[in-house]
Length: 91
Image (cartoon, rainbow, N blue to C red):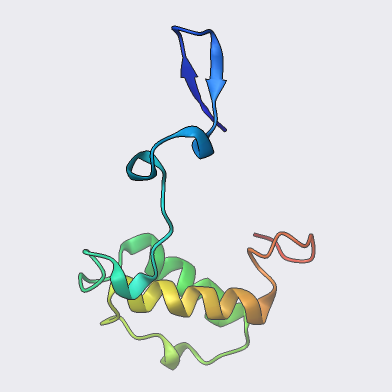
């Protein structure tokens, strides 16, 4: 999806934007907020993924950081097939 350039009346793609204007993907360990506690939505989603992966509820660690939670979410999505876009998962 691009940004509208009203002067020329055309859509500008992200590839045409300067590098600092693009939305780069950073590794969770490089996030400036990565050491903050995980968010409520992360915690809720982790609990759901743990359940779907057949893991015991005791594996949920409420002290995870945002970065740690994100990495665990990625791992559990692969294990459960959620969020992979292959049509087999519910996410």
